[in-house]
Image 1: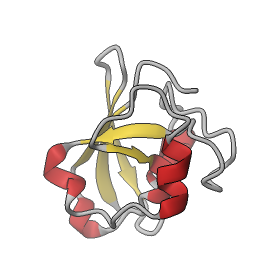
Image 2 (image 1 turned 180 degrees about the vertical axis):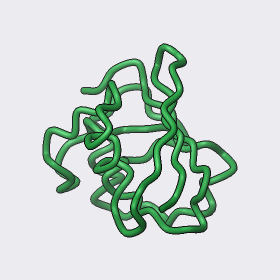
Image 3 (image 1 turned 180 degrees about the horizontal axis):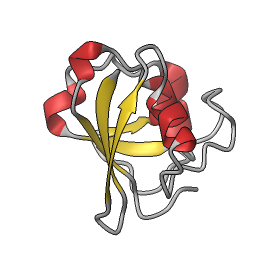
Image 4 (image 1 turned 30 degrees about the horizontal axis):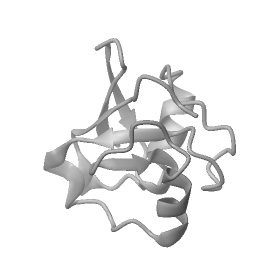
Length: 106
């Protein structure tokens, strides 16, 4: 298990233990994290699992692929550290990963 921290838009912190190999989005849904809608179920076909990755972890996750980049065009308030949580797979090197949930999803 790998520790992940979700920070909701209102500042509420959610600490969870995530199984390695699962996605950040799957763990958000499984743990009822508010603001992660995940309408497409992780198919990278929407932007409703948009998160901001803490700067300390940006370099530890794989580079964004074209499909994810295209989907982020539909997200609200995209930033340099924006990612779709369905595209981030959990592994031990991400222990302590912190992601912030935007104020709203598309």
